[in-house]
Length: 113
Image (cartoon, rainbow, N blue to C red; front, top):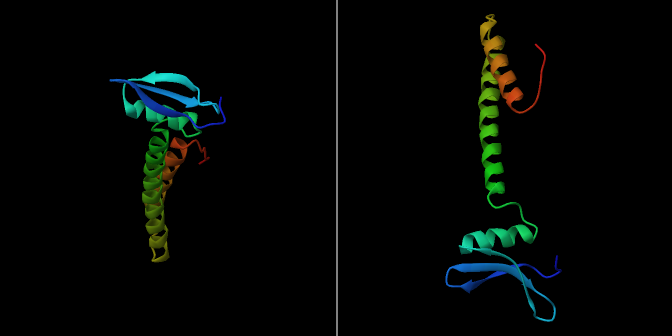
């Protein structure tokens, strides 16, 4: 690997080559791609970035998990608040606990009960 950053250039009419320039100016090709987007993704990765699109996928997964957790947290809040005002039914608490347990299990957290 080079100390200089990777770049891409259009090497033919429909071919983009990723590589780097040595300090003396000599071009060192690394890979060829059919689109500038693919070449740019490779450059990004070689220069220390994440795999193309991985950040977007991770962000989407986290956003979906957060949304689910917030919905269940809101349900738990309302369930607990209802007991403050005299609710003695146990079914709402069981339902909320079961939904939270399911979300936790989806995220690798095991709880007893």
